[in-house]
Length: 385
Image (cartoon, rainbow, N blue to C red; front, side):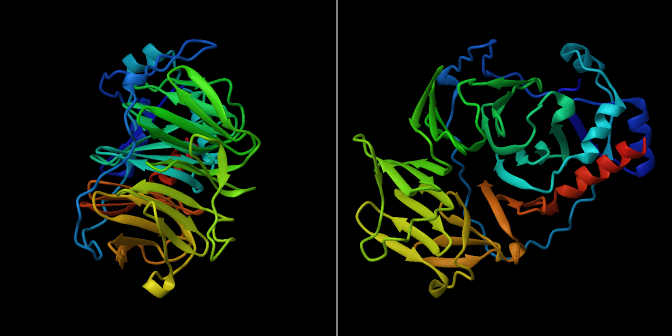
């Protein structure tokens, strides 16, 4: 089975089809230190883990008028990679991609050269330099392809699926890891080399080195974050919880005890805790809580995602797109007007927005690109063949 498919833009549909008839290509990654995966017990070298926090330079607000890049998929063959991974080139296997759902994007992450999307059909890895992309799904041995969370660590990819965590290494090899975690994974966070894994029914796990520890049992984890104050966890059952070294406690506001009953996003940045809810954004500085809502020119109170840049906090909303917040000042990002944001990440002037049933939008200095048509074009051609 193929471990990794790589599609790159071509000049015309004819070239694309000829490329498909010739064969398939697999994209190599640079050789870097990666996870060590060994049978039953998976050991992760803690020194190889890096923080997943992203930084971006402040940029001018307003619509990006650059043209949308023309995208056409083409496929070529990399015989060496196919031989290395023991893959075959069955078009029947590739045609299975046509039945998978890449529209439903649950989580996104972007760094200097690639964007990662966790979807109901698997994981998409989009390379921003040339608009090529790779698919990791059922034909590539990710049997539990229904993905909810994605996290890059060095050049490897962690994927939270409906049945635990998978690791995709730099060669495109996919293997399940951390066999202690068998539930649907809802969130993955890397905090200074410690991986937090939130699940739908089994609570919160901490992975430190090769040790997996359950920190909170029997809860549906929505989001997790850690700052100088505590370890914070948003749950369906108990709202916002925090662990201060002496156990878990429920966080409530005296003037609004129900404010954190439903928490949709958490982020620690700029020395503060940021809490997204259906009724606005709450900011905690260690002493006081501040609420940001429509009265502050946030067009919608229903917060769905948060991402920290170098100076700004970026706020995703359910129907009104993305807003930038700085020192009490809010500004909508015009290119995101009316987008139903489900997940959000930023890095160095690039914005990646996962949409609710609508694929993903990438905004960079090159322009605004809808990633989903790339997959649709490739799937359609595969189905025809």
